[in-house]
Amino acid sequence: MDESPTRQIDITAETCPMTFVRTRLALDRMAPGEVLEVLMKGEEPRRNVPRTALEQGHEVLSVVEEAGGLTRLRLRKAGG
Image (cartoon, rainbow, N blue to C red; front, side):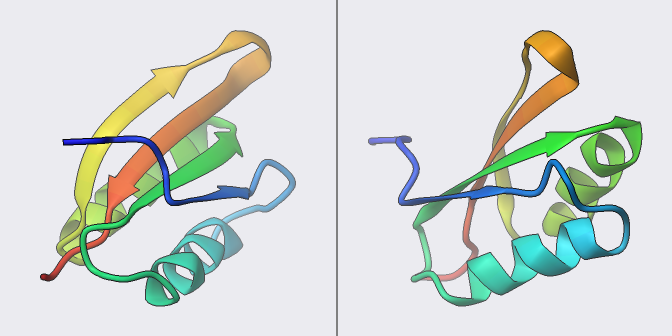
């Protein structure tokens, strides 16, 4: 199955709780099974965004730490 993202958002400038609000809004606009890539920075979003996505039934495909404190998160929208 292709895991390349259907959509990408950059929330590196956002702070909690807007980090997940922006992520949820993006997921709401997607079809079930599509993949969202979220670019984020900081400990709080890295901890909270994947956990909250899981709580809402979405699948965490990967969490990749990159240079400069950037985290690349891939989520599959629930449903379908």
